[in-house]
Amino acid sequence: MSAASPKSLFLELAGVTPEEARRYAEENRREAVAWLEEQFPDLVGEDAPWISGGERALDAIAILEAKESRMNCGNCPGYDTCPNIPRGHSRRVYVEHGRVEVVVTHMCQAKRQAEWSRNLERTMQKSQLPPLLQAKGFRNFVKTAHPHAAKMAKVAEEAAKSGRSLVLAGNYGCGKSHLAAATLNNAMRKQKTGLYISVPEMIDVLRSAAWSNEKPVKVLEGIVEVDVLVLDDLGKERPTAFASEQLFRIIDGRYTAQKQTIVTTNHTEPQTLAYKSGDHGEAICSRLQEMCGAGGWIVSQAPDYRRTFCGGSVAV
Image (cartoon, rainbow, N blue to C red; front, side):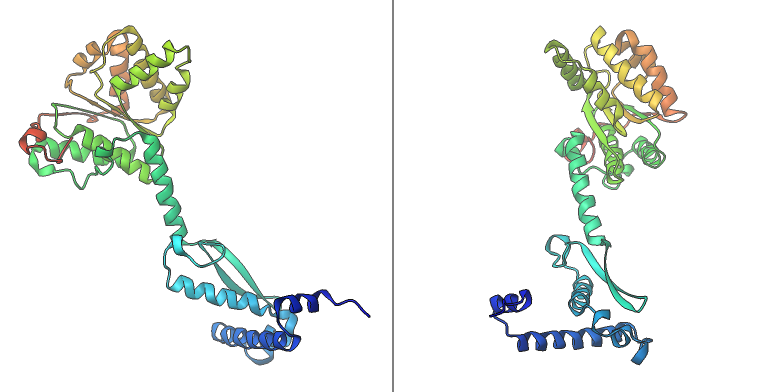
């Protein structure tokens, strides 16, 4: 008694008779050919490879998978529920060298959008941007509330496009942190890395690293290397020798690397900020002024919007 062939054994295990298998294959072939004739109307009769090439010229299952893939993409449900395999990819049919080829394409727009959203979420988490500031943008900043607010917003929007550094100086609640966050959010949507950090908190982190016998160099490197850095409330830190030295290292590192740096401060005069920044204050402010260029050190005399709007979220 001869052993069963692998094909007949597979059909037996699948519960399909050879006759049923042939019928299914023929139905698949007819459906595949009908769809191909719709897709390639110029190839008819003997010119069609699925006719002239015989059965070997046509993988009916692959063709029908491509047909289903195109239908799925035409009614795209979004990447998370995409029924295509692999998810987020489609299949295209080519006729080359007398054969019909099915190729899995690059990721579709839905997958690119989903990956962009996930990357943005991860970038936002790494940026340490406070939840209050994550929704801040240029569109939800009230520019009409005060002429200085409009001017500061215009310069910040231009900096978001050009990548130049800024110093946003002014009273409490005049919109400095809002515009700094808007600039950072804009950069992160372009897949740039960013970091938002309060200067007093940053000095505490660096001091803790030094006290615990950890080298603060690694922390400094992370701050220096991000694409866009926001230093909030510069000048509020205690002007110790340690704080001044760490600030100089950060500003000098970003100055030499030409990295965009956004600084907010309540000190409207560079001389006052230099004094508040300790031993290295003059060097810090000198570099900031060059990084910002003409018109990049913005001073706002706008009133405190927090008090004006009784706790509203117009500006931070």
